[in-house]
Image (cartoon, rainbow, N blue to C red):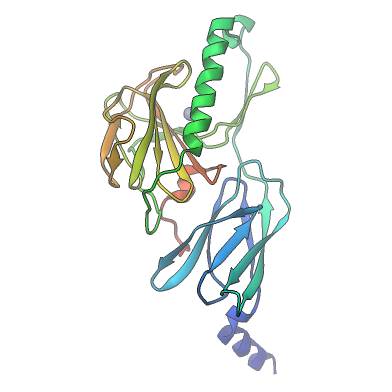
Length: 273
Ligand SMILES: [Zn+2]
């Protein structure tokens, strides 16, 4: 009897709602439990893109670094007005396992004058706007390649306490590499911002479609301008140490539907569709 039940479960997996687990900053790639046209998926009060791979429909859902650990619904729906099919999966979000470090600095070093603060605020607004800029480019499967070879010097979401005060978690991934090392587009995209900023130095933001935008900071040089179209792998900048930086490295950040995620979760991963 148990054996029969197991066989039934194995041949009818699509009839059951699935439970997933993911950490803050992860990207879920999950198979659709339902068939039909006009397939949509919603989670965290947002619609997420569905891509096709090997004839299967796969939703990509980004878990914001700041999503509270808890259980959340993933709602699938398909069909038109005549026939609607629905299914709800659940995902348990767990706390991310992020690096914590504590440093002490002299007060002077950790504060900026009024002019600097004004620039920092304007830069920050420009970055926010660039992250929200949509482009018409589409990637059929948004699996990224690493933009530059090097050593991870500061991981995603690393949390620093300066003189006991928590700073914002590191919004990207730092890859240490020599000045001049080429930076490649991890996916096809359109350049939405090229700027020189107080903290971030020379910076490029690329839109990749479906709400996926990436940022590159502390560049030695940007080789593109706003509106340029890039193919996956195109070299568009050089690693550098411009802005507030202690050595040559690439700061690489990814936002997906406004969710800050670990860039590494967009790379090819074992066990993922
Ligand atoms: Zn960084």
